[in-house]
Image (cartoon, rainbow, N blue to C red; front, side, top):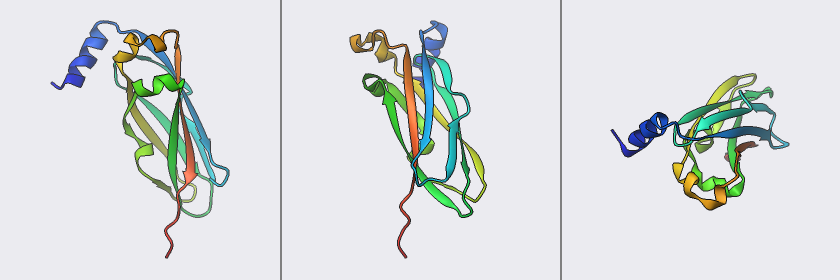
Length: 138
């Protein structure tokens, strides 16, 4: 068992506190995709891995490659929000009319519970914006 697995098991068994996560999605003005979270909010146990799903659909008549940037608010929560797997780590190419589900596997670090700056934070917002990837010149 890894340290992370042990920490997760302890968090689950000890009834670790929960926090609300809000999921936000947008696209750049030149990005012809529909992009949104499957569920706009979730309540998660601090220290326990969870998954959010976003959907993206290419509304163009040509394949489009996009790349996602992200932001975590409040800013002071950013150091505690850990993405294990994310569609934002690589470019995504969608064919015309293609719709896909894109998961984000994440957890909120229990160290947040010890941080005075995190007192009173009841919700963390994870925002993604999809941008058109720069096409390579031929």
